Image 1: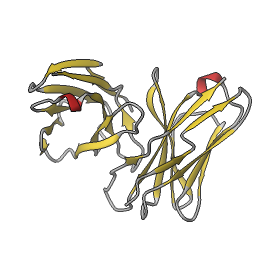
Image 2: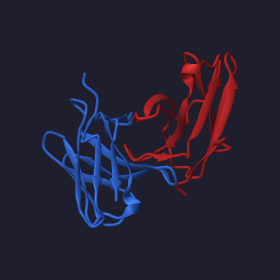
Image 3: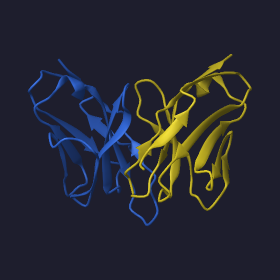
Length: 111
Length: 114
C-alpha cells in the first residue's frame, strides 16, 4: 500500500527535447507529491510538488501532471538541458515528513 | 539561511561497531527526518522527529535509533553495524505548519562498513 513505482529507470534525451518521468502510487491517502533532483555526491533537492486537488502545476521548465483517478503523476522537463542530467525521484506522503520514494530515474541530456 | 548540515560527511566503521550521525536542520525547522539511500533499495524512510518526539518510524530494525534535542538538532545511531548498513544517510528538515511538508535534504553522511 505504501509503494510508489517510477519509470523509466533511465532516460536519454537530446538537448531541447522533453523528458517525461512517470510515477504510480497505491495509497489513496497520499496527499502531497514532490519531485526531487539529485546530483552525484549531493542530497536530493526539492524541484516541484503538487497536491491532488490540482491536475497540473508548472514552474519554469518543469511541469507535474496529476491523474487522481489513475493514481499516477508525471514530471515533464521542457527544453531539456545538459545541466538537467541528474537522478530524479518522485515521492508521496500523507504524514508530514515521512516520504515514500520511487526508485529513481537517471536522466542524461545529450548536447 | 544555512541549509541542512550533516556531520561527518564520510565514515568508515567495522562490523559490530556502533556509529552516531548528526544533523542540524534549517533554522526554524522543527521536524527532522532520516533516510537511508542504497543502490539496491533506493531511498527509504527511517524515522521522523518533531519537538524531541519520534513522530513516525519506518521499517528498520531496532539497531537504528535516533533522537532530537531541544534546539531541533538530531542524531541517529546504528548499533552492531552490519555490512548491509553501508549507505548514504540523509537528513531532511521541514518547517512547521499545517499541510506544509516541504522537506529539505542535507548532503548526507556516507557510511562504509568493512
